[in-house]
Length: 428
Image (cartoon, rainbow, N blue to C red; front, side):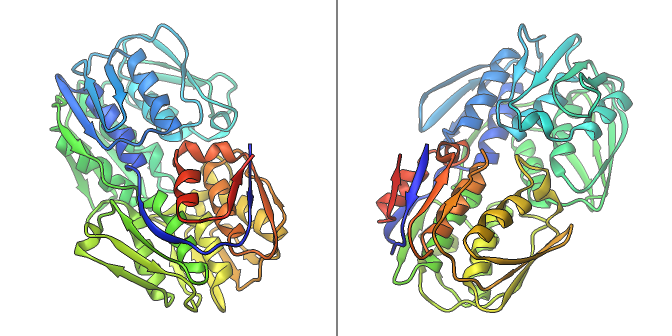
C-alpha cells in the first residue's frame, strides 16, 4: 500500500487515540494479576493485538471485542509453558517484555518476531536472565531473536547499558514475581519517561519498585499483581504527527483532544518544543480541555534533547526542515535501535526531498530546507511512514510514501484522522 500526498492546509478537531506504551503495559500487568483488569480507551493497533496473543498463550483470558474497553482475566502470575512459538510480530515492546516474562516459566519458551525484530539487539537481556538464575540464548548466537528461554529466574543482581530502557524495564515487572530480591544497575539511563511510566503502572497494579536516581533499582521478590482499572490517556507520541503537521502547514488550525500534560510520556515535550521554536500553541486545562495549534508561523531552529523521546527523532527531523536556521537533535542513540536505524532512515528519505543534514553517532543537525515531492520508502517502519507523510504535506509537488499500511502499527486511524483534517492524502 502507498500514500499519494500533496501540499495541504489542515483544519478541524481531532481526538488522539489511546497510549501505545500504556496499552502494552496494561495488557501485560493485567494478565499477571489475580482477578479482572479493565482497560478503557486502549489503542487497537497491530502491536497491541500481538501482545494480547502472546499473553493469551501464557494463560491469560483477554476480551478485546469492545474497542473502548478491554477486559483481562489474569492468571495471578502463574504463567504456563507456551504450546507454540511466541511471535511478537513487529512489536519491540512485546518482544522485550515477553523475553523477561518467559524467564519466570519453569520450562522452555521460544520467542521470535518479524524480520525487523530478529535484528534488534537483546544480548543484555539474555545476559541478565543467565545472571539471575535462568537460561537464555539466541538460536543464531547473535544476541537477537529467535531466542530460547528457560526459567525460573531466582533473583540476584544484573546490569544494563543505559542506551535502551527497553532492555531493563521488563525486568522491573518480571523480577517482582521472582522468588528472591533483585537489584538492577544502570549506566547513563536514557528514555527515563518510559521507566517512570512502567513504575507508575506497576504501582497501580500493586507492585513496589525502589528507584535510586535511575542508577539502581531494587525489586522485592514474591510480590503479587492486583487487578486494576486504567483509563488510557491519548498517546503523545502519536500526537506528534498531526500536531507538527498543523504547525508547519500554512493557514492550518486544529484543536486536539485526549491529551494530558500530566502524563508520563516524554513526547508531551512537543508542546514546549513548538512554543520554544516560535509556534502558536494554546493549551486549556493542561490539555484536558484541548490543545489548539495554528500553522504558518515562522519557526526557528533550537537544540532538542531526545534522550527521553527517541521515537520522536523522525518527526522532529521534519520539523527541523521547516524551521529557519538549524535544529540540533541530541542524545539520539536509542533511535538507532528501533525497527530501523530511524535517524539514518529519516535522513536518507528527507535528503531525497532536498533536506540538508549533518550527522554524528549521537546527534543530527537539520538545516532549513525547501522540500520537493518525490517517491519515499517507508522502510516497513510506522514512524518513518508517518514522518515522511507529514513532510510531504509541505513539499512542492506530489509525493508517494510506500509501506503505508505500517502506520497501523502505532496509529491505526492515521489516514482517517489526517484526511478528516483535510490533508490531501490518497491511499492506494
